[in-house]
Length: 196
Image (tube, rainbow, N blue to C red):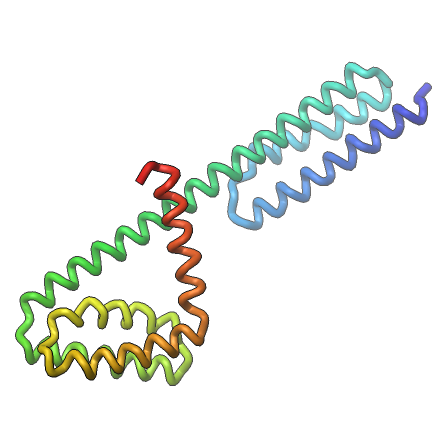
């Protein structure tokens, strides 16, 4: 005969199973590969029913251990997912840095007229995107103008500086730098983890 204490333990195990199922479902919706955990989850409910029928602490302990193992496995999956996300972000930043270096090599090879033309074109593009409130498109243009700036003739630098400040102020008021600063914080965090 099952005591009220045993019934309470069974209820807690079922509740823990339900909570774990919900977490697995959320993780799957976030893009994690949870197939192995889901297969293991299917085996737990019959074991809970067996513990309910046999009414032994041993069977309840088996279920509790299985749930604890799945809990650890979910934590490990989350860690692996976060690590993969960080690696993806670092790779994207490296690609961006390589693109920037390639662009700077191109600027060295351009004539003064071509640099001036390119700069004017970029500033006009930035203004058009700002007018349309397409701030995500303006930010890369702003970075490119910053890269070109040192190759400009002195007489043009002041005008480009003023235009860049207008672009910068509009971007800052849009909040895009706050979003970018989170990325920079992540890179600093990664650098600390890997001793950079």
